Length: 304
Ligand SMILES: [Zn+2]
Image (cartoon, rainbow, N blue to C red; front, side):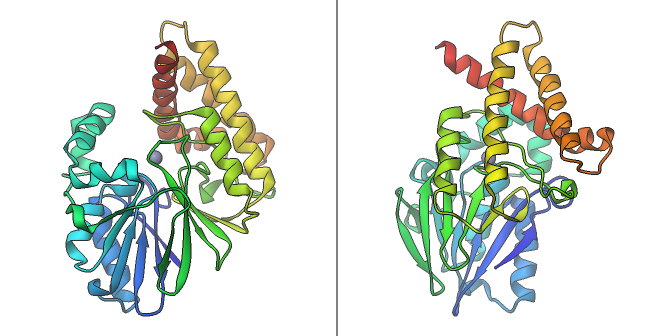
């Protein structure tokens, strides 16, 4: 398999994967509309025609993963779109998804980063239940529903390499942070379906298979380890505690972002990531802001 940079934000921030099989190729994560020319170029460079694309799979329908799916599907006449049952209708009729994301990011950022979402015909959408498997290019893939980051999230197990395509379930882990102690990982709690106990259970579900590899969307392949899983679990607890502490503050979202950044800076320093705090802060600022928004949504949902 081969990873490519989807082109979102800075380099090495979001990935798509090609799973090359016998006579056909699958794309895992479609990225955004801007990712599609990159995917096309890589397919061409690897000698694949668009007719040979058998599947486009999205781990969930957040737009850095699925925003380009409709555009890519329109180019690949034989492909099926593989998606969580809860995400399927958003791929067929993306108007509501687009409207809700515009609310989170604002119109200017939406237009710049995502463009217009292209619908996929219903008969080309394959919605897979928890535990379903699929034969793709001579290999068997297993799909497990992994709520916690989003209720429309699944992860994909590739038995051949003993690795999970984790989407956002196994957090964010950028290669620039790799240090002598290995990768530095943080969870993503973005709006609007962060569910801490579900996310912790999903991480445990991934680890229960004793994986060798995790193929992260943000970003790239990392060796699976119990240390990374326990770092994630501890951060989830820590972020929930931060959210509860800040719940009554006047500017709670800003307060949560500040406390979260302090927590991540401390963890990065303890792990000797080799970046100065200003750089760490700059690299994580966007994720921390989105995480704080997600925690605020979660707090509001707790009150209902
Ligand atoms: Zn996501």
